[in-house]
Length: 517
Image 1: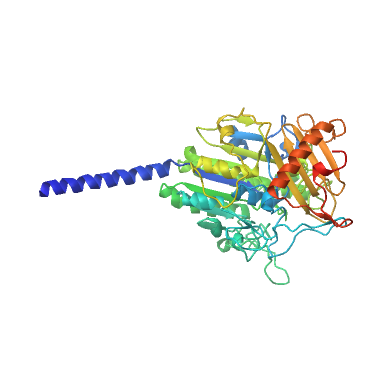
Image 2: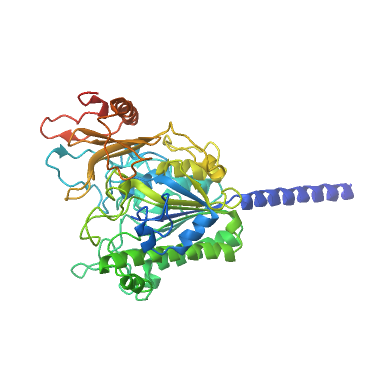
């Protein structure tokens, strides 16, 4: 009897060990996922060309690690974000379009503060000025289930490093830990750093008091020569050492403050651009870009050293188009993204088209290129697909569409899909090309733009006119009507907000309500 009991006990113990080992092996087989997000980086602010030929801007910048990622992974030549930062970030972590989540503009570090500038013609909309909230009932927020929370519930170790800017100070969304990140490094409600300098403690005091945009959580680097881009990278790699050692899958959201203003010279790279003849402002910008690229190189090197590169997906993206205002940038305003029109804040291509790269060894083909258009809310369902998460329970309805089929087949095409941009806000005091109160819709090669204040529709064919120089609305009335109907229908479905005319006291008309349509 005793021998039988011992045998049964041994059998049970072996089953437990096998079961544990199987679960452990499955956990290890899940790919690690890194989202490498850059702030305010334009489509051409890299030595990697995302057009059919290199441009003068591609020749200006030096980004060897982006070049490596492009060689080893897939390049997306038609990748899009929102015109400004917080809408993009909320869409990324929720899978919801900005018109739908109503965080249509950048959020202030101060709670309950509308960042819209006053406009003579239109009243500001009642948008979600406090950003995203993982908790219901917070005024002026979009409540949803955040991507890192879903991944954490499915076995991932989740790390945030760098810029957060999901919600205003004093709201749950301002702290990445509340969004499901187990580790938060330097993330808060701020949208840009007071300083990139460790010697300045990443701060720029005002009247002897800390700047509200001082970067938190990096006290170990205060008084040192450590540039901000390096500090958040070093800390991110320290943080993922734990799951790597435990052979547990990790999700790293490495979100750079670079290349947002204030343009601070990264001394390691500055002279190269001054010697190339750039003015001091543009040399600082280019040095910030190269410093960001060094961070990417540090991450790729770490993956190689730890022998986990083959089981790690790296997604590189920017949060909006390149800044092109003056004097924040050197030279003439609205020229820094040519041939793309305009820049950050605009629904023209210069404000929304982004440099996007994805490397997933064994899935993406090295050196591949896709022309299929994607948009920022697609990251949410795609990352869940990559992680093998099925039927995730989320508070929100997800608008994004997984681009996993594109990763497997760069020739994948879906030209019936429509993309929507909705920016019913006034971004800055100055005027610029469609940087205020505008919506846009892309389907196939066609793109419709609606300027609310002018009550005007513009139509462009991006295949033949990437610079949006030739408005062909007058010669294509049926296409204008078709796209105006599609845009209006989608905005109605999402309950999008519309500014009110100060003259009439009524909301501006939907695109398909304009005279002549």
